[in-house]
Image (cartoon, rainbow, N blue to C red; front, side):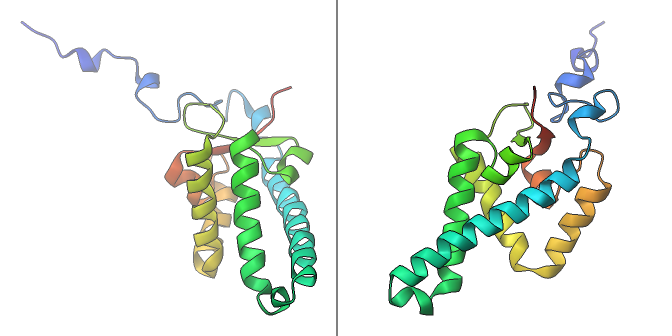
Length: 158
């Protein structure tokens, strides 16, 4: 009589989030992350706004295209910083970082997809509110983009 080997496989290796810290047993990784994400977002928006202001005032056409410049600078800033260190400068200041479902730092492609998801969710108020509610209520504090990509924001390891 043959047995089904898939039933004997440990469950933790088949679940996509099993490589991330457990929110109950390792709560320290998630403590205060929601507030830190918000503060990091404020820092990032201020930095992006300053760069946008400089670019817009240096170029004559820039003053007429400020929203487009802000969107472009923000996308590139977030993509480059997430790809290089899995955290924006605001997140680094707040000592948090993104990890993928395998517990690894984001690579360039994952960072691009995360920023694209963020940009799409920011473009629609309802989607952004759903994302904020999910961050406040989900076990790992994941927003909509995080849930789709399997990413999570964690306190940086000491």
